[in-house]
Length: 134
Image (cartoon, rainbow, N blue to C red):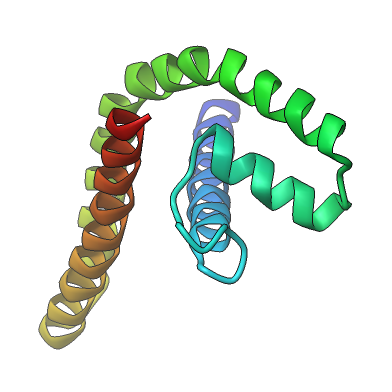
């Protein structure tokens, strides 16, 4: 295998690993077992998550929330800048996976993707609604 082919293969494997890890992390953080009863993401949800898991004092909770709030616009900006490229890569990834599947498996894969997208969109809409109400 040439160095160029090996590098491309390693890069593709790294990209898939990051994609899978991000999906798993998003799923884990988005599950109702981990986030506050109100659900969602953002400074309040992440602060509540850490407060429960780390047993934060009131002053620690206030400080952590302020840190999340301060970094939130920059994090959202970065995600918005990267999202189109991620969507493009995700589309290519799914097309290559679909090429390996039977027609029945492709249909099931499409339903799974639609279900995950619906879940993701629901969380995003919830975030937007909460931000407007604050």
